Image (cartoon, rainbow, N blue to C red; front, side):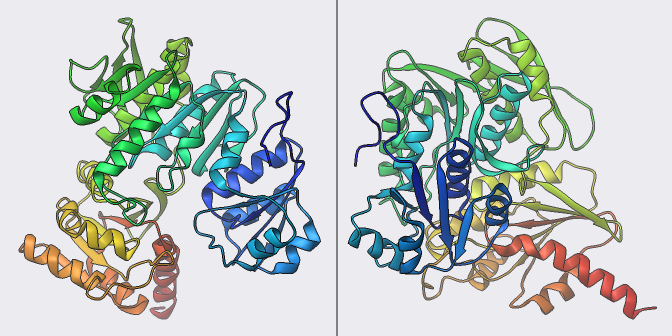
Length: 474
């Protein structure tokens, strides 16, 4: 089944998404729904993304059942890489002769005919995509956007705008970004990750080079100049390359300002045309977020937009859910939740946290995937250098089978061995975790729950635990 008719219109009018509760799948489904397509979906359990889809009027079935495909009778079925060929709905769709598309193929339908900004990188892509979408929207440009997180101020991860602009977080994990037809590409960094899909860093770099080459001769590739090898990879494409970073050798130079509110980042950005713009990011501290914002402002410059207006719009950015999100303050402890699950992004977040005015930084970390923990164990062991206290909880498998010897207890022992004197603990269950937090998190401390799994539930559970303890002590 072709994606488009001879006049450029999609060949389908309805689609059924299997695994619709994922961040990427739900955003695609939502935008298609807003464009007038009949969208249905299924997933194993409900989630905040599914609740968002249901509120929007999309029919979602909990559980995967073959008869669902007969009931909804879609023109096309869409699957994520997490859905195996043995899924009963996939089997039934093929029996009925319904085309089964990978998520990436439907993503290319969304961006067709738009001026597309595709933002990729091992880490930082969700925040940068959100910054870019917010910036363009608050300039009055009304972009469509598809992002792997909930953008604060919009309460959604996907929206169908009315303009030519389409901002897409470009996911390298399953090579789906190779289906895009971008006009501007941003790459924040390239490191070893998703080693369940790639043989190693060399293959990852080769895939990113293909992605950067998609912009065509008239496009622009924007890359972080803090990584010289990334710049080399970008230039190997023969496309126009613009670098951004703190060093004066970059095409776009970010210069931090001293002072300001502890949680805010205030900095100047000097663009290739010599214009200097001041940006304030209110709730995302750290040099890495200054770089993310500099990349976003560079996008505005590459699109030929008014960069002064872009800087003002960018300064209204409110954040992304689970990216250093303030949860609550309880008993004098400030509680923050963060999605960081790769050693480099963990180190960057903790470097920012340690510069704030707190007595101690206490981290609860949940490794995400056994394969990632095994491949990057040495890097994880050093990623928590800026944490005063580290508490590890069990690995979030994300559907993987356990690997013998690859556990959170293993990582706790490795961190303790590498960093003698650091307070490192393993909590095998929630009761021991709460007891540990009672002992370690004191007034004036920052408590960060960190990871891509269900560690995000620890914050609310801790608040409930504290409230219950107060009742018991009355």
